[in-house]
Length: 316
Image 1: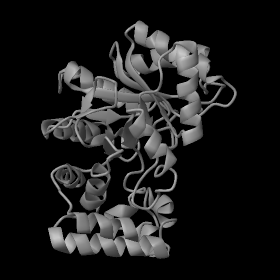
Image 2: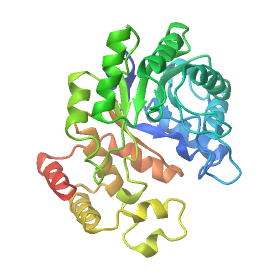
Image 3: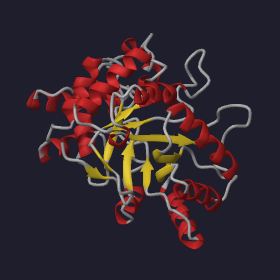
């Protein structure tokens, strides 16, 4: 499998990233171990998590996903240098533990390192913009972590074009490390936030892009086609918002391409993202080995220009 350079970070990643938001939520520890091991056996090398995952699950407080990944790394299932671990800082963990101040970043990274049972994080992302902290303070903290060897590369998540440009300007003006990676929401349905100025900026500045909600909360798997399909499902409520005319057009286009290729809708939706020049790799998660095998196939699926055009038009 051909690895792709992740912007200017020096990291090379496989064309699909495993989303660790499910660990400790819809995938228990044993299932998570099996999924991670199979994913890496298949030639992929990157897993994405955050300090706040999976705080939304009953009984959780955050850190569960990192803890499971840490135990898996410690088990020796993979050589540490062959795994690229992405985690994030800034989401609200309660009791004032949130944001992108230098003080909190320096504390949060130690907490993440401890949970991950490693002495460095490959890619550390600012999870959400924090208007209360100047970019130069946040970037100075990230720069210090790079100098200390605790992180190898840094990036931002959920920034729009103006915010990303402001962060680049602050880095240049203050002689600190810039964001070399962006993690935006982007999929066949949700395109307006990334396509256009933001995608253009990432390409012109050689910023690596790893997309989240790549399958639109599972909607693009094709398993949610009516309101009834969403009821009683862990992500059903999130997927339900896509059940409009646009969503139905996208499902119809996915069905057409599926009939032509024999591939499942999820595989096609991910292959569409992988074909986008501004995208380095999409993030996708699975909660069973059968789901994972389908995701793995997406990396070897080549869509024709006509098929990409059909999908583009459906989700425009």
